[in-house]
Structure formats: structure tokens, C-alpha cells
Amino acid sequence: AQSVTQLDSHVSVSEGTPVLLRCNYSSSYSPSLFWYVQHPNKGLQLLLKYTSAATLVKGINGFEAEFKKSETSFHLTKPSAHMSDAAEYFCVVYKGGSQGNLIFGKGTKLSVKP
Amino acid sequence: NAGVTQTPKFRVLKTGQSMTLLCAQDMNHEYMYWYRQDPGMGLRLIHYSVGEGTTAKGEVPDGYNVSRLKKQNFLLGLESAAPSQTSVYFCASSLINEQFFGPGTRLTVL
Image (cartoon, rainbow over all chains, first blue to last red; front, side, top):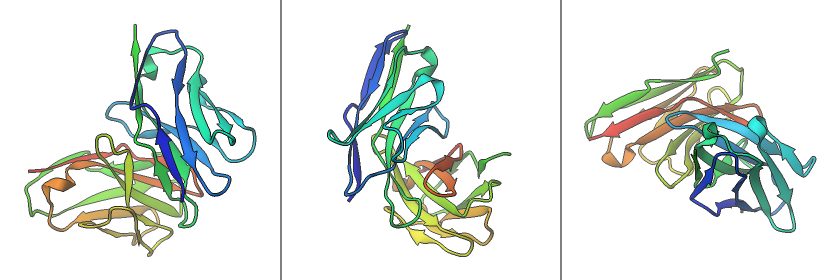
């Protein structure tokens, strides 16, 4: 069965420093993986997705994630945090089977200090 | 394109009252979903639909019903609201595996 674990519930960084949000997945086959972002009182927006093409995936707003099969990880990174990056981030795996079902991690709240 | 819209944005109910949440999408997507979001729980799937006239149960379906009479609309009903249904409800639609989300409905049941 597919599952996803976000290793940190809260990450705090200073503006201009790197961001690392960690995600491990469990899947019996090559998964499709996503990162979504949710700004306060807003809906979810797709940041990036991995669907078995390039292992390094670039997304919007300078974010990228690397798929590492040997480590079953899909960590989200950004070289330099901006105040507007403060939000909650969800790592998501495509469940397959029943069409379109996604399994969400519990979320990582990113705080950015000036 | 409006994308995915949800009505209403906020609602307060008393225990035992009923209500319907409306989701509409203008992207001609076949698949639509209802999720609830609770603190520290991520999003959990309530019900979903793979096409007009079809619905299926998700992870947490109890206490909810849905209908998909038109391709562009997906309705979520609460027949007898309970305080445990206090949550933020998100609707989403998709073509394949990338889902597009609405802005959410914040529901409080007293």
C-alpha cells in the first residue's frame, strides 16, 4: 500500500537561507509524487510533480524536489527562502487503482523569519 | 476560467441541522473529490466521482452523502450535522492524477 510521511511538522528558517522539507514515501511500484502548498486560509496549489521522468523536478517559485528511489525520499528544497514562502506544504503520493486518488502527508508548516 | 469554486465559504450549523456544499468546475474534468482538512491530519478523502452520475466512498464517508447529476457539479450533503464534522472542506477536480483544488468551505457545527 502507498503511504507518505513528512518528517517535520514545523520548519523555521530565516529569509534568504535554504529550505529543506523532508518527505519519505512507501509504494509497491514506481510512484507519482507531488508537492502542494497551502497559504493561510487558501486552497491547495500544485508546486511540482514527479511522474517517472527526470528525477530532479523543478516547480514554481524556485522550488525543486529530487526523487531518490534508493532512499524512498522526495524532499522539497529552495536555495533562498522568501517571506512569501511561509505556508503549509503537503507531500502527496498518487494511490492508483481507484482513479485519481491521492494520499496526503500530514503537512509541514514553514515559517520564515525576517 | 474560474477553475474550481465552492459555495458557501463559511457556515455555522447547529447539531442535527442539514446542509449542502456545492462544488463547481469549468475545466471539463471527469473526476471530482471532496476532502476534509483537520489540524495535523492532512487532507482525507470523503467521497469521489469518476464521472457524471457516479460516486464512490473515500476514506471517511460516514455522515456524508454526495451527488454528481451534472459533470461540472459535485454536491456534498450533511443530513444531520455533528460537532465532529467541524472542519474545512475542499473540493477538487482532475483529468488524471493532478488535482485542482477549490478555496475551501469552513464549517462549524455547534
